[in-house]
Length: 621
Image (cartoon, rainbow, N blue to C red):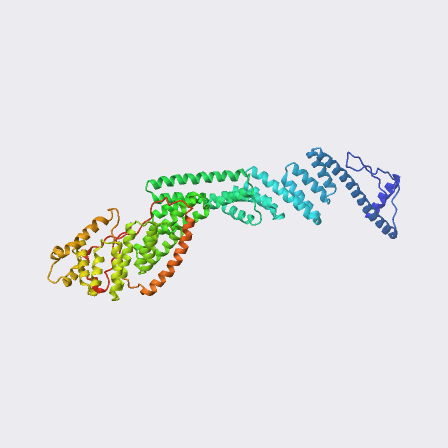
């Protein structure tokens, strides 16, 4: 039996049942999805042959009928699916999620091309915490309706994000990181997703990667929680100072942040503990260990000026002047001018400049010493020791006028200081040497007289003046100076040479015992007894420079006069300001001093060389 005969058989069967072949009847039960049968039929009519023309018509009619039937079935299924979805929504509202899921599944089986059904089933799975199926349903919905992909991708990314949080709570950090990365594929700029990824990486102890991500995220989002996280990472890597600034930045953004305040308290306690250890180490003489500990305190809390001042003081004791100066300068920027820490830092700074200058002086770097003392005097103009040291440095490079100006400034601060007066006398003596070498003997005599007026207990001064008087043919005055010098030091070589000229064929003893010498000796005895310095004062030493680089007198005096006018003007202004400040409470700074020249060891006649032999200072106190 061919296809046409089968269709003809079906047609006659339906006609015998009282229906038409093109109009099928269906019955629907709300509680059952199956269709009723069209009915049974019985026929005993014989089959008759069909003509070709009629056969073609029947085939066309059959195809039309099948299409109509399929459309009818689709409509029925769509209606049924719609009712199931409506019921599922009601069940979801009543929190009957399992029944709602079953109805949605049945609806999808009837109408699988509706993206909304998949979306609803995805939401149902999400509420059931079935994240994998929820994701699958949303992905299917996106495939079906790509035209509304934006809205549903946002929801899908959120599901991935929720799933990552669940996995994180279950300590499945790798899975959590995988899920949040999936969420970032749909929403790569979402701040909350980026933060969660950083948290998962931190949990995986991939700290370096975590720090890089935090720094990148901070470029676009300044949030307190990010600064707190970076502070913890910096602390973990040992970047304590960065940790300090990060946590304070977090407090600026969120003053009520408990986590940030806890970190600050921890850092402050750690810094103070290290400072205590540093103090104990310094008292025990372990300066290196003390510096190491106080450095930790500074790194932990870099805003405390006292820590920096303490380290600078320790570095100064170690002779590390550059580092000490840097610390004191830093400390000055950390506190106000009215604070005690500022005063201590400033005092330690000028003392360090002075100590550094003394170190340079002892090594022969006089210009560097002058530069350092300039910095000290710029900040503290009432310390006589600074002027004395700078004066010594000027004197060593031959600038006697500047040296004399510094000594006179120091004398203004302490008019009764014998050491300052002795240095002034030394400068005048050196001026006399210069005049003598230039054969200006009268001028040299005046300079030597001024030196003797300042300090009348130096034998060399009298010998120098005696030679200048001898060259001017003032022999009685020259003999008187020679006797004074021999009374103070009978072994001075130049005095012996001069005695051979002034007292031919007489020895030193006979010269001193002569009746004509007794009056002069008596005057010297009274002078030495009445004006002798106390034992605590340092003896005066003659200049150790040769005056080889000293400028001409006229140029030097003009330069000195101009400089002195400017100096006094600025110094008076500074004095007025400093009158309102407290006096110096720290120990007196180091002052350059010299040992007395051993005249016995000086066997060379300095006048024959036109200057005294130079001798480097032996010690610095």
